[in-house]
Image (tube, rainbow, N blue to C red; front, side):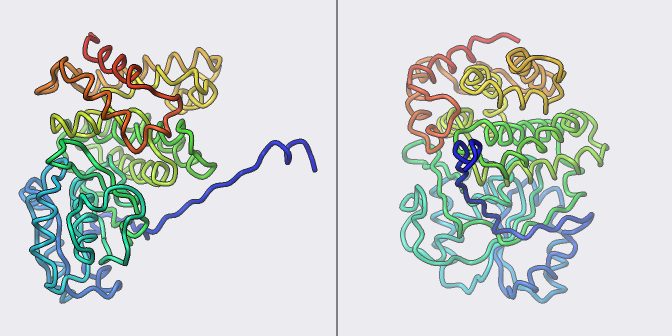
Length: 394
């Protein structure tokens, strides 16, 4: 046995339950793909903005041509609420729904996962918080993402706001992963610049945390680094040049790849904090991630300077810099990205109060992904990061 064989013992799993199809105008053929899955009656899960933008018109026509019956829930809120999920599931139990079609951003896709779960499981979505709590199969989910950020079209997570506790809870099970992801490269053409910026930073956070977290693996590493490169090259143009279809198409791919990465690794303390403030203030998830990414990256970098330097190089930091200098330069680079994209400061988030900081820190520490962060965190460490972010002036 060689020295290398003695030192390296790789053990990991990688799962991608979704078939992925990407084409311009793909949503016009949605019905064909659903028919291939054997679906006859689906529940469309979307939000008012997607519906008002007319993005569903070609989907409806496609389903009609394929002879697929459909019902629709078109009022999914950002940070989907448990009470809404429970009410919707109760309404559609026993109505013959044999599949769900999620059209929208992460909220619509997470809501579809949770609703599908409850169509075959009794109780409330709160009963299924945690990992592998399902007891049987659920109706298949098909996802058409309309933003380039969450990667939820290829993950086995759903994040739902528990409205009683004011916390975001995670539901993890391989059975809630979409069986089919349809990426229409034209679907983000009308996405507002502010949403393109925030969701793009969300995707970047997924990729960076997937690479630097403690449970990364060789496959997630490759995906994460490539996603970081794509986002570094195309996010600014995608957000600031709405007609730049090539940049927006590349961001759709980058978001997907980042989702594959963190879905088979994990995230870390950026998400822990973002989900805490999302549960308390209803802050958009991408905005929360963008705010705290530079602070957590800076806090974590000495836990694994090489990996943080590799992130820096993927961001475009000069490869001639040492690992220490590159990792430090990446912190400033991330701050500048947020500033250039118009991401607000933490102090500018509606409802934020310094009196809440300890509660935010405690909820962050209790998060599912806290243990995966590159550096062991305490409530005090979270509190320090949150306070520093609040008083930060760009």
